Image (cartoon, rainbow, N blue to C red; front, side, top):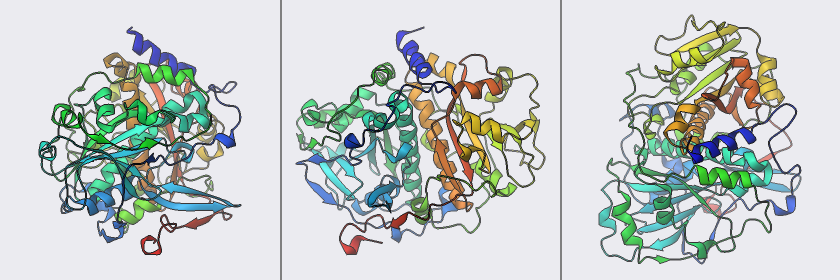
Length: 540
């Protein structure tokens, strides 16, 4: 086994939670060193963006209908809407003298390790260059102004680049060694959030495979040691091409033009002191993407159009109302129609958000703990999102599982019943004894084709978690559309899930858990508009 693949496997093993021993963590929270949730580049010129998402009339159902939304102009105002609906603030919460921000892209512990960048040609209302997005103030900081003439001409018409990076310390402060996993989940959530925001504008968005980590770091300025001298590093994650056009630039198109660029700004330090987690450093080094490209994406099979959600709510409003549930009532269920629509949105369709963003076939498949869905027997189910995965999953699991089709399930949704039984206790145990997993309408464990992915390249470890994060973002929005709520669960007993299913090796591994149900809100919390702290004309 190649050394990097062995090291990422070792990281995955050492960061597993077990009923009698949790993964290495801080033990207690050092509140004095809680990281600043907002990165800023001091000295970089900043441009305040307009808050214009309220102007969008796109219906939520139209996000899943290719061609249903006319493409908005590619200009500064619509790039601002893209950022507002993907990486921007969605609300402020207040309790007991403390106030904290929520964002459209969810995050483990609301810690937000993901940073966003825009790399663009000269657009109406926005100059060319490399920009860093600050969600708190809805501003872009201009990190680099290209020095070479004609740099904008190297961009194909009709798009901008959105880059994502991770500050691992933000998650490690609370979660210790396991935090690297959560950063990858968050990157996947952020990618899906960008794709949904692009769809609301009638734009495309796709993950670019032609950029390795070194090239991405150079493009975003993450390799500029002097700019991060006293601050926490950012690890390059992903680069997306976003806009009405399809063609995207390659590293050779843009990086030479940044050789003589004027870079401005120094990263702020987020915590006064830090704890070094050697496991995260080892995983980061092992999972570097050192070459461009990945296996080609196969066209997904033809599927019927998605059923429309009840009421077809406004897309921008639904995106901004998304919240992570902190508790479920143990009573609220779902209709079978709402449940099947949720599952249907997890299946790729050609040209349909968010799955057209990813350049690979599905490698993560939900195992469902169904508790309260009308007309569907409580039990354990599997949704194989790729036809070829079904026989492989069946060979890997217990021989006694049924694998029965589900009566009443639409024929194109490959849902299979493993066993009809009360699985509330199992769901709660696996999710670190958290009642929210049993009190939900259903819970999900996301099973990844782990072994074959790492054989291809160790950086697939990141992609498996990204894909799981995209699945989670779909469920978040679908839950809101169905009038319920969802939450991601990063604390789970990995091998308890594997034992339940009968898995005997690491060919399949659970990488993320999720729950959907009737939320119990905390009445002690006050909610404030996302940008009320800016001038009154910008508050909603």
